[in-house]
Length: 234
Image (cartoon, rainbow, N blue to C red; front, side, top):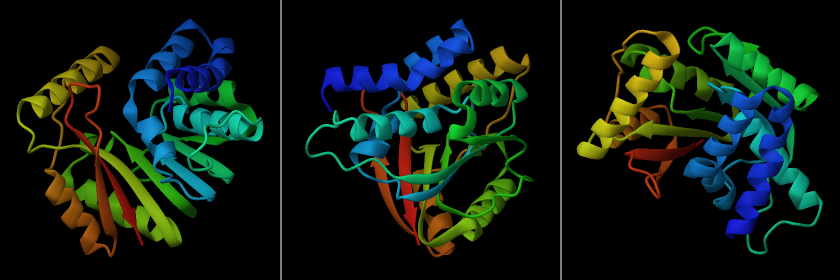
């Protein structure tokens, strides 16, 4: 992906947040530009056509990103050699924080559905792809396993579960990731939190026990963090 294309995609995806407010707009631009997971999902063609469930959807950045990618592709400005962005028949997000849900709804309108709820209790419905980025470490191991089981049950045959998790075996980069997560949580909630983390091999084993075949992609490029993206397919 060329720098100019990255910039065009970031601008298009973040534009709906301008009407929501300065903070959500600037956050969208910064997050979409700096976080390698968004580009990787498109570059590697990991999201199939059909129904998408985004667990821990925040202010709806993944929905905005995929919508912008489809818009640019259909407008003839998609780079040669890149997979076609998914044709999504529906995008559904589940987010715990009411403010983020409100921002997502204001920005994206009818392009996606956003529900305010706890991922441990909210019905996942049915999907062809389930995406869970950076939220499983907020719940304990038993709850993590339950979320994975429910995600598997929600997937159609041939579906994919895409997860980004911290790689607990990575030493200092992982400790730095935890530190940043802890500071962000403290800033947003006013309290400290004990995260529940696993090694990459432990996450892979949990997914394989549910019948998934798993492919791992490093998400460290251009960042000081220790993250891995797991593509688990039925």
